Amino acid sequence: MKDLLFDRRTFLLGSAAASASLLTSFPTLGATTTPRPEYRGPKVVIIRWGGGARRRESLDPRHTCAPFLTHELTRRGTLFPQMEIDRFHDYQTSHGEGTLYILTGQYERYRDVAESRPEAGRKLLGARFEAKVPTLFEYFREAYQVPAHQALLINGEDRADEEFYNFSNHHLFGVDYRSQTLSLRRYKTWLLQQQLAAGQFEGRQRTEKEKQLREFQSLDYRADKEAGQGPEIEQFWSNWRNYYGDTGLVNPRGDRLLTELTLRAIRELRPQLTMINYQDCDYVHWGYLDHYTRGLAIMDDEVKRLVTTVEADPEYRDNTLWVVVPDCGRDDNPFTAVPCQHHFGTRSSHEIFALFFGRGVPRGKVVDRTVSQIQVASTVGQLMGMKTPFAENAVLEEVFA
Image (cartoon, rainbow, N blue to C red):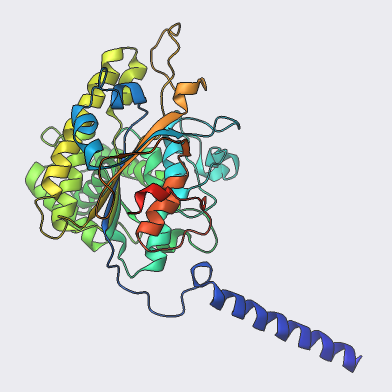
């Protein structure tokens, strides 16, 4: 019996030592044991060219609604006009899924979290997804000493379900490496907290405002409600309030709001990794084609404003890497009652593109081969000097000069 106990103890000690050695060999996969280095690579701005945009209206010179993208930006970088979302498996071509494909570098059949977490509750037209593998935000903050407020997801007011794609449920990453989110809903949450704390409401009105605050907070069911949004973000909202006030009738809306949030964040928070989830062209779901084409034109104007302003900043000028990529394409079925949908799985809904431009990227290059949307994550990771072990490992090699 003594020999048996000794053998078991020896085995367990040996297994523990082997596990520790394995984690040491792969530092990105285990807990960080040494101080993380400061990030000295390029600032990265990922523009989600969405929600949902076809190549035809984005890139084709004869039909484009985005002249700045088509005639200016494509000459300044490396264009992948034949990027696709996998057409051979049952992967959804929609906004939340496409955003996570870009951020994680993996395709996945996402289901609403209520299927596995009934306590989260179901949301009409607001399915929430949890990625199983880490996002670029998590890889970034795990690899480098970067505060959460310098890794930002900028999100639209109509897509609260997409505000929580800045961290996965992966056991080696997750909430400790999340980014922060800027959105009108986040501002309203902060504002309600301030107003309630100041005793601005009484009686029935206060009860209604407290209920509204709980509803806002319940969307981010994985967050620590007591921790709030962090002092830097709360100061950002305080500055926003001082400028735009409380009514919501003064600040920009739609995609123009996202640009304003981004530009103010660059001035005040100095982010190193930013993803902007443009979405105005998705208003085509109301049934009018010009909602789609006008949305693309607005987005093109906003990207021009964004690029021009960022390139006037000495810290960002010549030190920013830009990635423009749609979350999904759109159907081209002429017999549908509502034009340009993306839920029917037609070929064009899987056909997208990607444009890389900025620091270190070859100019004026057009890549004549089929590539995949999930290659964006590993490519960005390599350009930022960090490992992305759970993402598709085939990079877009033409981006590297």
